[in-house]
Image (cartoon, rainbow, N blue to C red):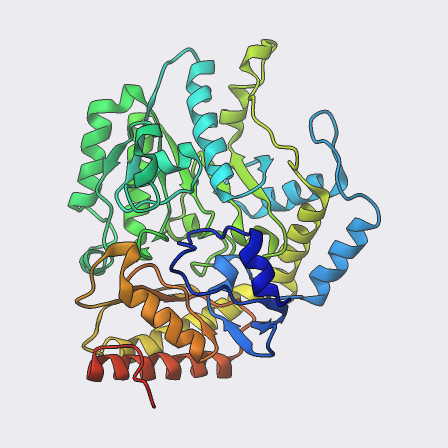
Length: 443
């Protein structure tokens, strides 16, 4: 029995309407930017396997680190115990994170890292004798699929079925890519004014503001100017609320800097990390906090303990591959490579912008996104699905966000591979503009 037939008997896939979705593609191996299917095809991983892969699949350096760690310690409870990979990774993160983020709390994925941050911010004020129940988030924000993270996220197809479970969050305007292109770096726009107005009214009740710095991912790959992020930090300082930076997507080079907060030279009070933290190998989440936040929990009163944890907190295997991932950033000059990818994206962006079917081109770091004009339906837009299937036929994985197509490959991708993807995108857009569909049946 083939793998897909066995899959159909028991498995339930994420974000998938199992009745109508195409059958899943069985993957039996991967190397570099290529995925190998059961029937022998090779697919270029144009979305870094859900935005997690950094240095390519099956990298020998990371493979070796994982094997060596498995031979000494695979896991141990992290309450009351510690181990070298967890300590070493925390030291490495403290060296490269924005100033002041010296405390590392481990969890197991991005949504949970956000959940930890929300709980941490809420209890921070409670431990200080203040009841602050309000969070401020941005329109089009997405922070994960657990209940707290969904509450912080804007209403969408992801959250609609669970609306009655979510707590109320104040929603500020977010910058839009086209608007940001016209903004000056001071970013004195209505976007920042919206946040300022909310904080002016609700600061004493607000625990934290949470943002995806510089790049709002699942909300449509919205790219900011750095001035807006700097303004957010200034407003949080002025009104005395914590700033949570959700860098689950943006961390580890995705925006061209190691962390997106570096674009505005700001430090949040709490930062959420996952995805590329382990180079796409293992689940691991980090919520980093300042010493000021940590000290609110450091007390003789045991009720001020941060009561949160997971069975696999600080899993040694995951920590080991995260360490190897960070070491490779230095060994392979990864940030320089991202810069080269970004230059190629900007060159092709000029070509993309000439297509009548493309409404907006958004580029930052190793991310290229473009929005299809005259498309509707949001995340469930049929055109995104049609483009996805056509690119798969051409052996490229470009999973869209509704009508927003994105190309976010592993940083190890070769220039020739990038050019091939560009040619394929142009070909599909030409067909779409001529015939109104992503593919014309050649028969």
